[in-house]
Image: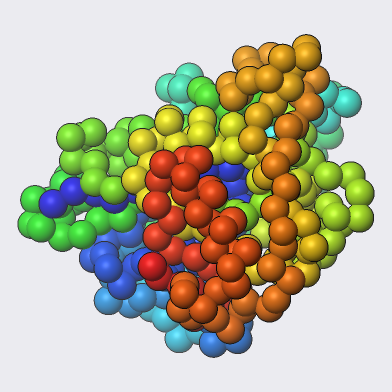
Length: 422
């Protein structure tokens, strides 16, 4: 059996949460492989919206195993909030959610460091979610971080205080006043360890490989999006982990030879939260309409998302990096009222057209657009692909032809039922 990988092909917020929720019935195990509470995976069913930050999006299916992998960074305080919300729904996550011992912990001082560092950048800030992600991954690579399994060791408190002390020294150098914030943050954090310890900590690399060898279907769930990848995104306006398919191997301990399908989630237009290049960004009424109709506000931060037309050069780049085998297209229903829809088919840089994403993220990019007639019809109640408007199907077929990848699922609304499986 192979591990299928599901991830975003844009700048995050593509609708991965719903995609995982819809596809979970096909799988036995859903495992998150990177990122932390800077992710916000939204799901909607039974008339209610649910947002997950750390917990895999398969958690609402109680007969499925959910795993937080070693590549994830976990904030016990936010984890507790998510668990309590699930329990209010009548779920018992301790039964089907397991946590890698090797996942790193986000400390209260990591969040303060995040705020201090972002403030120190001034007008060059990257748009951090201020969840402590970057500083936690920094400690991980500096080999000074704390892991989930460490909370059970006798040396935990000594190591916790030592790391906290090192962080406070850095905060002082930044001139950041932490004295009022830290005590209450730390009190909540220490209390939340109670909840964390109720869960089973596992050697996730062994367990996941055992599932694979036992012919169980495993889905690896990514966070953020390809264009925010630490290696291949528009550095430094990126996240702190590897968001591409390769990250699933190190984030779960799975060999590349065990990779199956790579399912790329693509929003029918583009959005981005935070700073950094965004070639197709719209600053007009069309961009405002996309934001308002699509509810484009960050699930984690609440910040308004930057909106623009679909970017094919960036998508082709993402397909190449990930080896995408099929695509889930989301939120095309948001564009149902537009008379004309555009797709960026090339970049113009210094007077020359190119299909390549440039290394220099300060270079001026002029998007080259191809126009399409809009379908101008509500599609949210359609459940059969053949019943979609001709213009909608032409839009889908054009994307498939350009990417040379089939679109296997089309989402026409936020609810799990508003889905067309081709």
